[in-house]
Image (cartoon, rainbow, N blue to C red; front, side, top):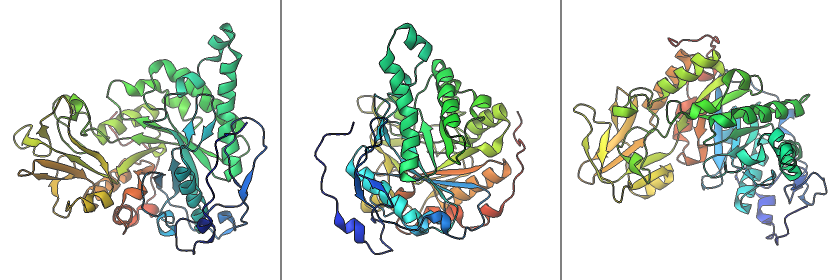
Amino acid sequence: MFCKEKKPPIDESLLNSPPRQSCEYCTSHRRNYIPRSGNHDYKFVKSLYLTDYRSFPESVPCSKRIIGFYSEFESLHITKTQLEKLTHAVFANVEMSWDGSISFRTWKAKNRFLSLINISKRVKSPMKVMISIGGEENSQYFASVIADLRKRRSMKTIDNEKTYRMFIKSIITFLEDYKIDGVDLYWKHATEKDKFNYLKLLRELRQRMKGNDYVISITLPAAGIENWEMAYDLDLTLEYVDFINVFSMDYYGPWPNQWGNPAGPTAPLYSGIGARKNFNIDWTMQYYVCKARQPSKFNIVVPFFARLWNNVTAAMEPGREAYRRVELTNNRADGSPYMSRWTVEHNGFDLSNATWDEESKSSYIYDSKAQTYLSFETEKSIEAKKDYVVEKNLGGFWIWSVDMDDDRNSLLNALTSDDICSVESEDTVEYKC
């Protein structure tokens, strides 16, 4: 059963784009619909028989993961140059529905995903293409779709069991039909009571993928914040997933509540302030690695966006200039939590004169006259994160998001500039557990 809404006309310009442009249309056997049930009665938009990227001579794989996320919301072109610097390219997000089916949220999202696939065909490296399901705006159905089947049977609700089977089947069908390499699951705000069901989902998904080289990853929340980490059994989870992306950012942000104060680094390597003394990458990664004892399975995030607070005043403590008070209005902070580099530039902000905070290994700009505070990554902060990943034997990095970089790919170049891919790490724990 398929969506019944009228489909907009296909943009033929996407089918004939010159090789260097990023809006090229789909790959072979492209579908006009995402399956919403188990049948395979697909309609084809177009069949363009492009060379599969696996037929290219493969370069030596990077020893660290460089995982780049892309979204439907940014306008920066997806390019071959970007993809050649990545080990994995992940499109976020494919939307989960209440019935367990998955689909694109908009036609813009679908066209951007198809562009990613098409360009990836020309990348002469073992870079893998994946999708992500869940996140901030689409995690609301996880609990109901994968709820305990034993409870369902006791309630005699056959339809609910179908949604669980549908979800697993929809993921596998999607990977097969678009000929991509894997899926990342990000169940935002999972709770401790969801632990068993999440494991069951991962186990069955892995079993259904047996015989294929599909990648399964999950995204974990930062540790030490409202006990979010209690929703996961790491030992068992690592039996079914290839790696874990840790959401080691957003420790400070201009949120629409009291947590918008204070302003501080988005993804600090170390340090914190007051009750947030453990709100940093090092504390989060030490927690997870000491639990799992497999550091190479974990990736830290490098946020490519900039973050703005307005109405920012004095430092929270003498000598702690990177953490500053925010005047809330109606118990809300004012600012922009996710600004692409294009947005930053076109709003007149100059990031070239950043202040370096040695304690947190972070860059920021505070303008006392305008009472604005900007938190963002620089070459120096990225270098510190690279050194940290090597020192702690971590698996690598994930980027949110590649298409929030500037048109020169400055941050991506900084992350991949030196010999990070040639660094050989042992899977030994370097934390004091």
